[in-house]
Amino acid sequence: MAQTAIKATIVGAGLVGSTIAYTMVAQGVASEIVLVDVDNDRAEGEAMDIEHGSPFFKESLIHAGDYQTSADSDIVIITAGTNQRPGETRMDLIGRNAAIVTGVAKQVKQVSPKAVVLVVSNPVDVMTRVVQEVTGFPAERVIGSGTNLDSARLRYLLSKKFGIDSRNIHAYVLGEHGDSEFVAWSNVNIAGMNINEASDAFGGLMGDYDYINLANDTRNAAYEIINRKKATYYGIAASASRIAEAILRDEKSIMPLSVKLTGQYGLKDVYLSLPAVIGQHGIVKIIAPYISEEEEGKLHHSAKLLAEAYDSLHSAK
Image (cartoon, rainbow, N blue to C red; front, side, top):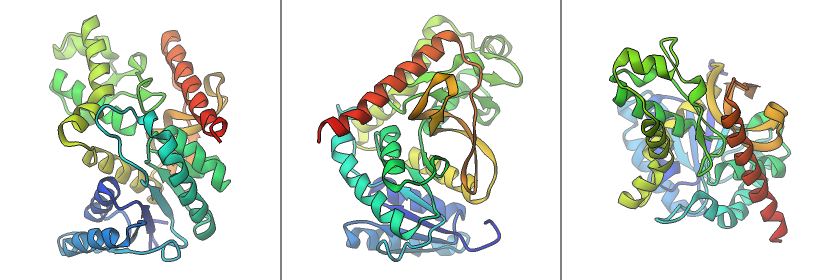
């Protein structure tokens, strides 16, 4: 795929969708990007604004269009939906966004039946399951952005504590992208050392309070940003662009993404975040790393909440 023209569609030209588009153009992720939005003027304006900066980047065509224009995309990134407001949880969006995402999924199924679909709309784990059910696409081709950004936030915070490059820290936030997510402290790895060994080596001693505080700061980061500027978009755009790049370039990279479980940790059907190998056809392999008994309990708690949230969509009909 990397040797041929790559077509990407982003559905939703709001702050998240347009920032993803800009990031993908700046990073040269796709040769053509189509912005689709119910407000076509908004999509056209965003595309024009980004396009005018394109001479400074690797050549990439970006334009607004409809679903027909987006036909035969290699990847479709769904950001459509209402934004999380101050004081709301991601789950508060479920009723508002399920109908929107369902409509998008039906269109994508018709015009880009071979695409990999990356869902960003919140609550992302539930919305990803909705998209997979509506399209009927194989589960490996329908992926949620999941806790990829949460894990990056955690690595950033750890890098500040230990005074080292965040790219040399391997640490995952797993489960729901939301309030029941948890840090898998049992498999944090820094230069071959676990978190306690790294704490001794780098002088950033970790007490019980530090574990709690870092996990809370990671979990609550989006709320803190929303309270200050009403929305988050730069971080998620960087995350989504990186996921798209790994898919389109068939990198076989490992990222914590929202995937449909097939028996990992005794869980099936629910979408939640675990590390996964991704390539040009989507999920290559879901990884079930060692986690402690307590962490596995937290994973099951996340799965229960997400299954109940998904079921609530049907009971509300």
